[in-house]
Length: 74
Image (cartoon, rainbow, N blue to C red; front, side, top):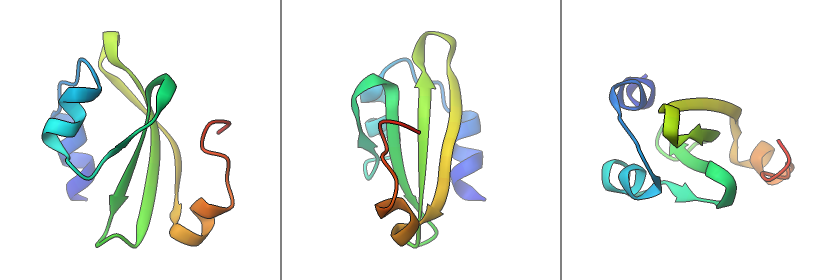
């Protein structure tokens, strides 16, 4: 998976670094980021601990499944 390889190699210290590397990423408050993957068929929601450079996957699903969740609560 190209997204996984790109994130694994990333060294994101802040949201601007994420946007620099993946311009389509949607930056939310509290360290959450939404990525569109697989030709925009799926969404991945992550929480990034920027000081420790750790990305935690909180949700993977289709756009329809994404529409049914509260991104701030997962």
